[in-house]
Length: 176
Image (cartoon, rainbow, N blue to C red; front, side, top):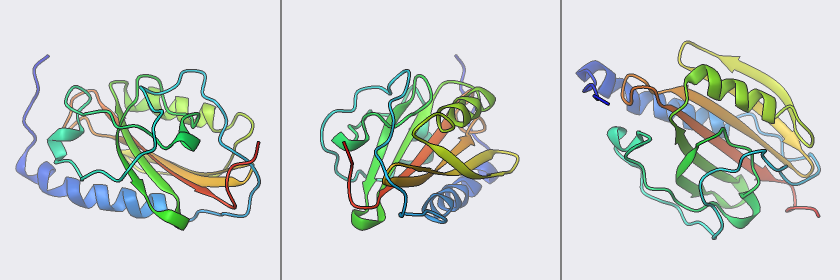
């Protein structure tokens, strides 16, 4: 596969897009809903140990073929991600939740469809969508949890790849 080098304009715009995605992920979350995240029909690439925050990768380190998989915190191993997602960054924010970022080699359309489907299944409820040309986001709630996910088309940097960011918060921990 031949990778195209991003244009200077695209490279300069990506940090801004990334920051907007993080702000969007951390906004609009309701912590007053009951229950743990539900299981995905196809779990993400290994995630079984407690995670610690990782350094922010460079823009080119976001590509599916180049990322290094990091573990998710134990309580998030069943959080739905799209098929073939490699989680490469986990940021534990204490009472403000956990932000996990991954990349899949699936198209934006396929990835967005999987996220909509998986977060409309029980125990999740999507409580609002927002969309632009390169990203789709949604707020969701579950039993004792809430959060936000954002799917971003990163094809200009990583041809064919899509980035997924999920904010997970808990109102008092996981329930059995």
